[in-house]
Length: 388
Image (cartoon, rainbow, N blue to C red; front, side, top):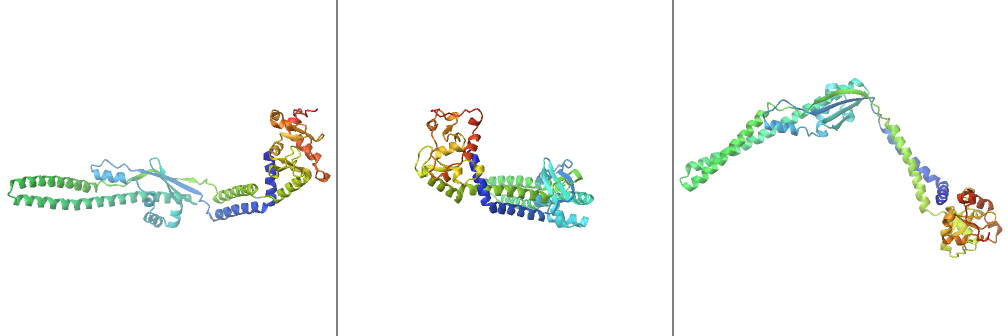
């Protein structure tokens, strides 16, 4: 078969470039082992809890409700900010670097999952609980800061609108022109309405100061579980070994496709010389159309006695085991599916042998190829010599 021929080429290339395969494997596996060795094993325990959007008592302030809703969109960077980590570390006398390293947040359907890993189960639970409380407090502080900014902005706007209103009222009091007074009265009315609107917003924002709360609350207190995650060293090393095998196989495959094999070239030259640059089955005598074929790959691929020089299309049929040489008569046989093709003309043609007996094909090799052709081995279904 064609694949069998390619497999033989692959094995020959592997034998010649085994150093390349070993280098590729060693590089991948070695890098993976080094990386895996540097990875610290995961702690033994995992504390898991979750936060959810806080639902405080009914508020009467629209500002408070708006800020509460904005507070549910906090990022990991805000929730695990340095001040939160530092407060937890000081409260529990822990290393802030370790807390940041083993703390993890994940998005849940209705909130945030909080995970903390530690070799001590109680400490894992305590730190996870403290982190959750710290995040709730952080949310409250952020909401208060946002409310403060709203109040300050509204107060500043109130002063500006009040001044505009006072100016408009002063101009109205000083005007004696009916047409001008009508315009100024409308201006005063507009400024008055705007002032009342700003005043209402300020009253709402000031009322929110008594109602504002954290946007987060505890949905599930931390629980501790054994950490069942695989050892990172084994995982990374295993991936590196698999990648090493894959890279080795791929590198040899590429070499097989693109690098010329000097032995194959020498083998072809031997056969061209032995058969006088002519296909012994078809008589084709153009070198470019002739290709070397190994009769029986298991018997070695560089001996003239285990090769033929055939026209390219005939070679493919020979490798595909659709065409064979009868080892007893040295005549051509073809598979039944080729009987209605032009290759039927080859049936019964004798193999033209080299004049040099040392270069003639091995009967044993021809017999091995003949036996591998299922259509002759099964029931003698080959297309016979038309002269028989």
